Image (cartoon, rainbow, N blue to C red; front, side, top):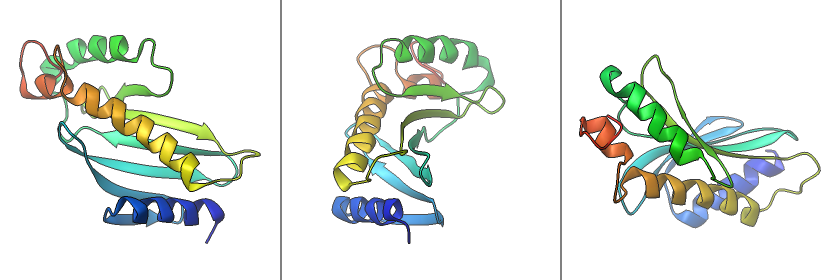
Length: 145
């Protein structure tokens, strides 16, 4: 087992979350946020990068994808870490944070910081005081779906 794999397992055990090992370099689990729950994948390429990918539970309907695209572009503007992405074919929305691993000794603190940056932003935009990701998924005029 690689060092990064050991560190990611240590992080998931620390969080007391159930996870599924998808491959030697990725794990999937549910994040219990304040504003909802979502699927997250931690994935890495040895000595290259590690990424945390949070996926909205429902896809944006085709009729709302143009509005969702604008919302996600505005939400991503000025973020210091990470970005939203939407697959325009099926409406899947993902928030991604990633970091290089080249020359870095992986630690639980490193993985925790990357993951928590991802979770806090996803949770914030999942349900906010203005337009939010839930609204677009559910077809509300001030949301993505």
